[in-house]
Amino acid sequence: MSTKYSLHAIRQKYKETHPGVTDTIDFTVKDEEKARVYHIEHPLLQSNRTKEAVTAAKTDIDMAKAVLGDQWNDFIADGGQVADVMLLMNEIGEQMESTTPDGVPTQR
Image (tube, helix red, strand yellow):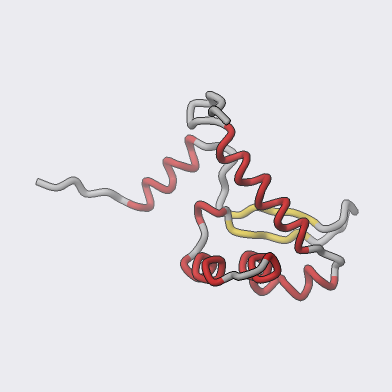
């Protein structure tokens, strides 16, 4: 007899055991109180559409466009820099590698 898994339940359990992991990551370009908030999907929880765009990306600009999607033009108009998106993605990656689900630091 095979085991039946609920992918929804697995996703929810992962988010519960990793408190810093949410469906989206919010950020601003500017530090102003009324700065526009941009949203990107967490790399582990990206939609198929975003994953396909990220996989097809050949440059950092392509990657930033892939994760920002329809927000790209507003991001650029707001003074956003692709390098900052890459730094954000790097920061997220480091956070994902920094601890195990029970909070124990990983080896680097």
